[in-house]
Length: 561
Ligand SMILES: [Zn+2]
Image 1 (cartoon, rainbow, N blue to C red):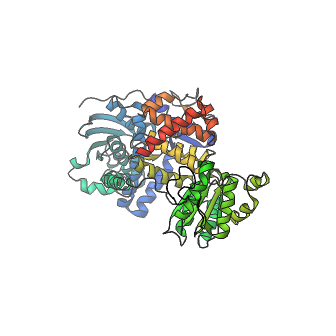
Image 2: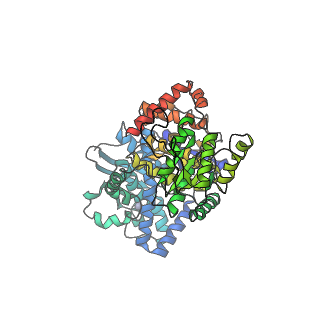
Image 3: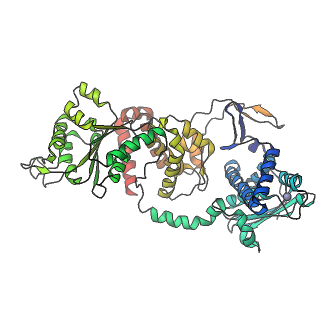
């Protein structure tokens, strides 16, 4: 064991930013509070008095643990792992910056290969010891529970295995200072007595359950990209959902309206699953994705010899959806001849394959969707009026994401969980600042854009780390709100200049490969151009065929996995 000296802490001071005009304080990506120590002391005392010492100790330990875990994440980001000791002492240094105690290192030994750990620190002017003595007088046993939780949480997250700290001296017992010692949990002979203070549904529990979760992950990976249930609780969302739920009990033709990416197919699928047809097929067709000359054979089927190349008879989507639901997305893109045939199916309930003499009965519930104004298309003569009236019997408008931002946290949680599984990656969650950015973004591409942004975030975030703003919005503009940070003498200073985002550096730090980055960049350009490939190609300084080629190339490697 060697003597430890703290590195200069200005790198940590830079993490602390005061955006007073917004009512926000940030430590890295974490929202912080400047709270009166006296108020927290009151809360602590109330907890002990109302719940009893044992229960209060558990709660406070776990609260400290949660805050240590968050700071551990800053350690790796701030100092890297070139010098493990320097990175580790970010914890003690932040604990001081946050005002808990003066933390003096006595010894520190980290063995990354074997996960062995041994450390000893002294706490002077411990806030918690003072608060405890003030509330209850001097006591027999150490009482810095929250701070022990912090040290344990920080170290466990830093090491990736459960390291337990305990106090061997405490100022609350009348000692001059507190002294803490940390070891891997299995090296404490009485670990089983101490463990309950850390255990709950919370983070230690999660560390311990990791193995089981990986197992579950492996099993669920077998069926990735399963459409998850619709998620939302906002008024606009619930209104649309209620309409769909009521339609499910009937056979009415439903027209789903809404901007691109709001999740129309998901609503259609939900409608199908809630209906009496749920055991029959759900068939989805994107009318815009099919070339005009193929659309009729795709929808209605084809008989052998109907045209050159029709070597075999083939059922169309209508026949395949028999008894179930057919979802026609972007129905406004249907060419006029196909519109006439569709109308006939809706009126007669029968189809005729291309080149076939006879008609076949089909029993299909039709759900159509569009993001264009069909009424306008009717006036322009590109959409049949009679078909429009047939389709527009039961219109349901799905609100854009920017009108249901209250649903974003729940959507984020579900999507992150799904992408963790899909990419076989475990994360600590999403940072406060990143969540704030997600809630304030305007989401022109709606839920689909959110999904893409989060998938990128899950890929870019460090393993077991947090998803942060820079993982979501690459090269995003620095904040324009005036911010203050801590100066050398500890007073607030206006932030000198917005730090420019080092994009190549961020990509390299994340260990992302070039192909994945290219994919992200292409998708982002397409999103920004609202799906217009020509405009997206211009953004990227390439031609449209070049862009299409690259997208297709990436997609085919996608499908292969
Ligand atoms: Zn103490």
